Image (cartoon, rainbow, N blue to C red; front, side, top):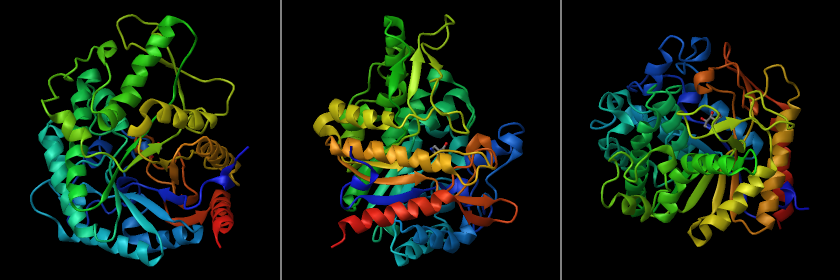
Amino acid sequence: MPDRYDLPAGFRWGAATAAYQIEGAVGEDGRGPSVWDTFAARPGAVRDGHTGAVACDHYHRYPEDIALMKGLGLDGYRFSIAWPRVLPTGAGTVNPAGLAFYDRLVDALLEAGITPLPTLFHWDLPQALEDGGGWLNRDTAYRFAEYAAIVADRLGDRIPAWITLNEPFVHTVFGYALGTHAPGRALMFEALPAAHHQLLGHGLAASLLHERGLEVMLSNNLTPVEPASDSAEDKAAAEAYDALHNRLFTDPVLLGRYPDLSALGVPDDIHGAVHPGDLDLIHTPGLDGLGLNFYNPTRVAAPTEPGGLPFDLVDIPDVPHTAFGWPVVPDALRRLLLHLRDTYGKALPPLTITENGCSVAEDTDPDQPRIDFMAAHLDALAQAAAEGVDVRGYYTWSLLDNFEWAEGLFSQRFGLVHVDFETQRRTPRASYAWYRDLISVHRARYSV
Ligand code: IFM
């Protein structure tokens, strides 16, 4: 049975983070406020009243963090660029100090032999754009494309591949449908225009990045959806959930069409958001790679309450669960990859795992559950590769413990490196040494 050491030659090893989760320095060097600054200030919005105001203080400590990456032997580092650092009000005047930070970061990464893989939007929308409707406003898609071009013009000479959006499903559903993330709107399925406008922004930005000779990826958090039983009702509920979570964010980009959302009561034009020609703008630029953020599969049953959502999400018993309570089912990753290959065929570009990891309780040391999690998922990845899936890299989530959105700073620790948020002391965990050794053994296998 193929395992993690059998991943193909040239496979890229990485780690991932995101700006609001690690940078801190929210009021420095001209950065404008983002929706997450506003949301985190709301009483009760984030556990223990935490915010990303300081987080890992990466804005000042990035050299130390790059030294940690170098110690791992990473090929690549996935980070996100804070739109409000570059354009404090989302559009118009560029903040040179904001761009200069990413310039320094990119140069320091290259100096360390690490390829930067930036994400342009990881949920920290400039508050000024939110004040104009945020992603519910079609105009935001055009502002996103302008921002993408500005950043690419500054950094594109040193960065070959770019990710436009991170997990538009999570941003739409948690941010606009349920209101548990910024910007805190609870519109249920009326939120779906925010999904369309993010995808439109992706398509517009992708064209501009391609014009500049750059490669474009999109990172979706896909989940294999399994019905709770063989009943027709459970199967229909699973199909409705699959359309919402997976196909809504992948079909338009890869196939140029939306899935049928009628089970959710959503019309084909997504409440009037889809204009003629939009699907071409989203689909035509094509993708050079699809990023997958994989954490767990989802089990779905028919709803027990009439008149509510057309599905119930149910637990998967008899498997381990992470500190977040997410079921650990590594083979679901293999199944997801084969399903994508079979569903999209030639329309599927090469895949990269742009996030995978688990939260472990603070007192778990050495962090064997995280090592077991990564080892089993990498074995599953190698098995999918052996079955013909074109998978090019793996970026673990995350390099550092960080601000885990509504869960705040302390409760969900995803880092290979422990961060003491009082002192900012970084302490590599057992999983750091394990990942370093894995990378070095894999690399040695293919060196001449
Ligand atoms: O921390 C998040 C990240 O920002 C997006 N993907 C999932 C991670 C863990 O919840």
